[in-house]
Image (cartoon, rainbow, N blue to C red; front, side):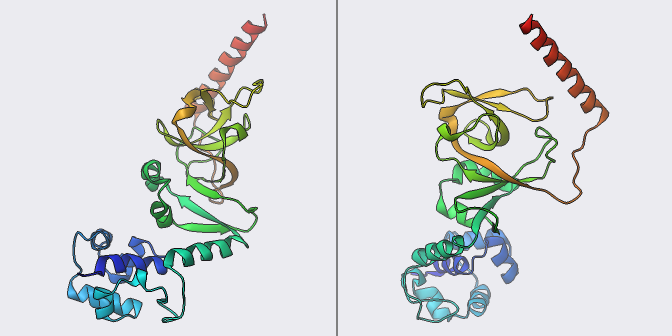
Length: 267
């Protein structure tokens, strides 16, 4: 039995590389790395030799020994490490988090798969990470947003959010990343009933865009799988919200309609 695919995935993760980064090192397609790791294809001899040279291991060990079960195995330090790979990775993350919060980044291209993979540790492990030393200890995630529904926050901004454990902790009118089975990943203001007398938040939440051209809408709380409170917004220096004349005219008309509606209610 060959352990090539399993070992390739194991040693790639020890280097904290994505499949794309490993493919670039080996000068092969990323899809081939995925096929090798999943056992759908066996690396050619020249690829096996390139892998062994890259990770400084013998071909015999790479093919016929399960590296994940060799507790003392380490790519850089030989056979003195101790502890399983998962334990070492958790320890590394814990130690790093003590000095700076680690933020997993969900780009737009990964947003479609996030709804299916948000609870899968391997999916989250594949995401790139970064640190922000100003963040307090906690669990954070960053999401890239596109579109003009939250102007003046420009399209392409990255929203850094802190996990909201319970919907009861949501504060009305604050901004959140909301992940739901109906809408996927969205960045909106959440409007709740501030007069609620019980701990129940209700069956629906109202999601509001900062751009008044977009109508508020409701989402069932049972369809919400994650909520992240926006704590920082990152965008390129010089990025400006793009308003055109038609958009500005639409905003004015919308505001006029809202004022008229409020006046009628007051009267």
